[in-house]
Image (cartoon, rainbow, N blue to C red):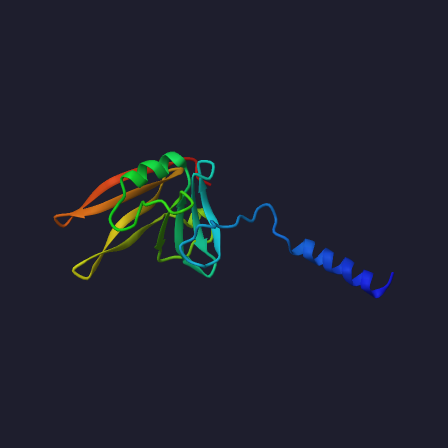
Length: 158
């Protein structure tokens, strides 16, 4: 065996060892930022995926793909841009938590705040764990009070 053949075989073996396993799940392609995303929680046959930013484990996004949920939430959006479908027909809600998410068990929920009134950030959306599922709530503000515009429950999360 010559040196070129040995190098080629070694490169292929090392590349095969470095390839992702079936347990690795890539995050959503519809991210709101260019961060590398990793799926932390998946619900209802990928109807909802909660992704974690690999560079900042406190930065999360919920990507809603279920057509029924996208249609309903999109027709009853919260304040600002929350609940409006993107060009891929998905709703992406971004937020932060105080403790990093490294597994599905670490995820309890987050809120997206961007609606500003008198220099105060008010929530537009909540993404919270409920039993074996996750509930997404979209809200707006009227007369200084939070008003829910819509919500959707995604069962069977892992």
